[in-house]
Every structure is written in C-alpha cells, then in structure tokens.
Amino acid sequence: MVESSAENKDLAAGAFAPTEVERNLILTHLGEDAIADPGYKASVTLGKAESERRASLLSDIEYDFQLALKKGDYYLGNAVINFYVNKLPQQGELFLNSQALAIDGLTINDSAMTGTEAFKNQRIALEAPHVVLGWNTVQMRYFTAFNKNRVGLHSYTDQQDQQQYLYSQFEAFHCFRVFPCFDQPNLKAKMSLTVTCPKSW
Image (cartoon, rainbow, N blue to C red; front, top):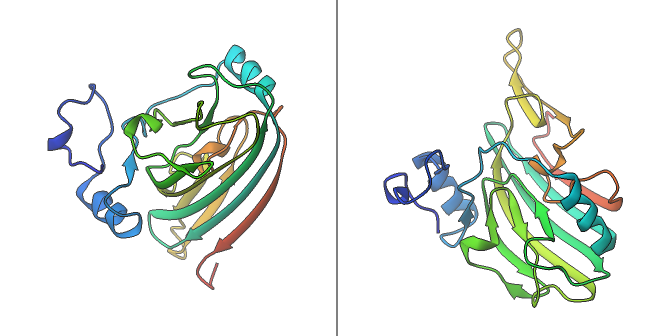
C-alpha cells in the first residue's frame, strides 16, 4: 500500500507521496499493508452542514489514545474509538478526521478495512454495513510527523540549548492532526490518553 513517488504517477497533481525515509519508517512500524493518505498535506475544512449532519448521527463518544513520542520528526499512535450510532449514515456522511501520514490495522467492529478508499483526504470513512445502529468500535495504529506550523503537535528546537520541545494547539480544527477523532466542538467525548516518551521529557 505504501508506494514510492515514481509509483504514484497516477495520483492527482499535488498529491502526497511518502519520501524514501518515510516509506521505510512506515514499513518498519506499521508494515507493508499500511495505507498512506495521498491528501496528507492538503488543506482541509469541515463544513457547517456536514458537521451538523454528523452530530445528528452519533453520541456517547469515547476515545482511548496511546502516543509513543520520540525525539526527531515522527511519532506513533494507537486509537480505540467507541461511539453510539443513532441513525445509519448515508455514503460520506460519517467519518473520522485524521491527519495521520499512514494508518494500519484499521478495523470497524472487527471488520478489517484494507482498501485505500477507507482513508483519504484526512478522512476515515465510517459507512454501512461496517457501521451499525447502536455501539460501534473503531481501532487503528498510525504513524505521522510532528507539525512545524504551530498547530496540532508542534515540534521545535530551541536555538539556545539545542533541545527539542513540543507543544499542542487543537483549537479550532486541529485536534485531528494528532488524534483520529470527530473533530467538532459539539461532539463531546470521554478521553483516555497514555503517553510514552523519553525520560528527559
């Protein structure tokens, strides 16, 4: 699933393809079946109508996130997301926002999702018959980069002590750059977060 730039000639102009270093890291951490998002570097938005529709479809959201933060440019995550569907969505109506560089092990209610259609343009599609009325569970592992533009999980190196520092900025539409989620203010949720990082952090 993780292709080189040369293998991505059929992608639309401006589509993202992992560098050689990134492809090797993805293979190492996620495996050869990982799905890279060709829209990883695109500027995306969430419209009012689609956010209102999504909010009407689900409730009782619970997130369980694990982050493995390492010094350098990239980090790993694991997500388990539970939610209650009140009404089955039409195609394209229900999705998770995610700016992961690549994901693997994506399951929706124990159904493995392996096609590239499941994750593109920073959206993870949640559609019937995989999504059902009532309780649903989505799980995945993901690999992505620290941000350098002061949103999401931003990384910078202090010029005085040459140490790497991180800070987060999630408002108003930047939480999905770190965690796969339903990123809109009117969809409240319970969240559990476990972080593994260098001792010096």
